[in-house]
Each structure stands twice: as C-alpha cells, then as structure tokens.
Image (cartoon, rainbow, N blue to C red; front, side, top):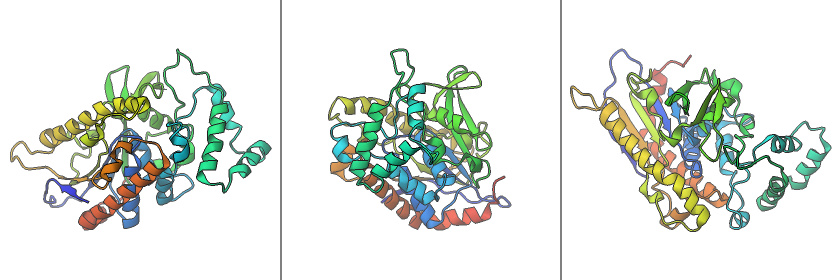
Amino acid sequence: MSTGNRTSTATIPGRARKTGLLLGGGAPNSTLIAGALAAFVDEGIEFDVISASGAGVLMGLLYTAPHDATPRQALQSWADTGVADSIYKMIPINYKIFQKPGVQASTFRDAFQPPANNPFFQAFQQTFAGAPVAWSDWGKLMMSSLSPSDLSSKSLGLCAHLPFLEKAVDFSRVKHMRPQFYINAYNLNEHRMQNWSKHEIEPVHVRAALSFPFLYAPTNIGGHDYIEGAALDTLNFDPFIEGKGEHHDADTLVILDILGDERLLRKPRNLYDAWVRSIITPLVKISKTEMRLFELEHNTDARTGQPKRRLLKLDLMGGIPEQHWPDTLDWSSSNMQLLFEVGHKAGLAFCREHGDLLRRAAEDTPLAA
C-alpha cells in the first residue's frame, strides 16, 4: 500500500512538534477511514489536532470519545452497520442509518429503546438476539417499514438527524479528550463556513456537520441554519491555515481522503446508484481541488518556495480490488466490511512507514488542555 510523503521539514528549535490528522467526508465508503483509525489504535498512534468534515466527524469521534466501548470496538462496529447482502440486493437503502424523520417516527423508535422494564422492547430484543445478521436485519427492516413518519412534500430532508448519535459518542468526554478537535458546517444565513472546537461540540453541532442537503434538513443552532461542511469543503484544512486556525504551526499533517479519487466516477448500475453518484461526482472534483490549493497556497513558503510541513496522505483506495470498484459506494455489509479491512491494512502499512515519526511527535507535545 503506497503512501505519499509529499514534503519534509525540519523541527523548529525550541518548539514542540505537533501532528495533525485530517478526516475527510464521504459516508458510504467511510469504513475506509474507520479501518485506518483502527490501525492507528492498534499501533498506538495519537495526534495533537484532529480536523474533520462530513462522515469524518463521526469517525473521529468514534476514535476519540466512543460511548460504552473502546475506540477499537467502536470503529469496528461502524463496519457492522451495513445491511445484509441478501436484503441490500432487493432494497439498496441503509435503513439502519438513514431513518424516518418526524415526531411520530421518534416516538415509535423510543418504544423499542430502554428502559429495560419495557416488556415489548425486551421481547423484541430476545427475538433477534444471537440471530444471524440477515435475520436481525430483516427484523430491523420490518420495524423501519412499520414506523410512521410525517415526511411530506414540505419536508426539508428525507431522514432523521442521526437518532443513534448519543449512543455512539460519549459527549461528556469530548471536551477532555487529548487532541484538539474541530468540525465544520456551513452557515446558510451568513454564507460562511463555521468551525467548532472540542470545547464547543455538542450533539447538535455534530448533527449540523452531517446535515447533507436533501438527506437531512438544515440544523438550526442559535437561529442560524447549517448544512454539512463537507458538501462544500470535503477536507477541513481551516485549522491548519495561517489566519484561519491556530494550528498552522503543525509540523506533520496526516490526510485521510476518501473522495478525491477519479475511480469513483463510473457508469451507474441502476437509478438508485445514479442518484448516489450524482452526489459523489462534484465532491470528487472539490476534494482534488482543495488538496491542490492547500499544497500550493498554504503549505509553500512564499520566500523560500519550500514546504511548511510534511503532508502525509494515506492511500486508502489502493487496496480496493479492481473488480470491486463499482460497489464501493454501497451500504451492503460485504462492502463495508471489505473497505474496513482495506483501510486497516493501509493504516498498518502507513504506521510501519511513518510510525516512529508520529510517535516521537506525540511524545514531544504536551497534553492538550
């Protein structure tokens, strides 16, 4: 698995070294990022600053502040959210993640959640506990189909805003975790990109950061409406840009990008696949352009023409088998599991090449406040 050691810089005397991690957007193939982060956990790699956009926000929080699980378990569990292949072939929608919106749907979901003294919930859990994945997913499909909803032509989005979020992320830990952490969303009222730090992040900010247009209604925070930042900036470089973020002095920046690869641009297999690719197609171009502009405008010293920091781009796509490329945007269980393994192998290879550098940087840098 190849990696891109794009630049090399010397550590400035008297200054602690600082490493940054950039987690790009891209939901269907986000298990590539989950697998790579799992490899970082396995190899003991940590970062001083994490900047995330889109699906990378959720992957980064599973990596740093999972709820009732270790980071390794939480990242692996994301690969388990795919729909059993036998169902996905007939209904190519991930109803386990994209759930119906509205008060009625929320009330219906709550009926199947703890407290444990809910006899209907207990009976439902026991029915599918230990069942094969396909049977469990059939049960979830049944409940999803039965769920009421207030979706109408006046709705602003198809789906509920991540009803499972608080069960996946421990928000009480976010403010106190080691790395600085940033997420972005676009403010529709002021027409500007907004970044929130770990000291500001609450569930509503994460939902704003994942409010991709049409899939989700804009998220309102303080009277302002926000959409997913990755819809416009697939890579959230702002914290590392002088004049925009306070971490422009980072010596090394590791980049996990799962959109900037033209192999994602393919002839669709059916109408649903055409719709998915209509979303991905402009993001591929945006991601490639953002990467190029950051290198040229913000990572090159105007006086010397030399790079300001190391840019290490982890090749997450290289290990995908050629015959599998048409399926890389599927929410099927087999695709999500395969991409997790590809990402994990790529992450391990990356750690073998750059692990000593990253570990030394982490040891040189004091814990973040």
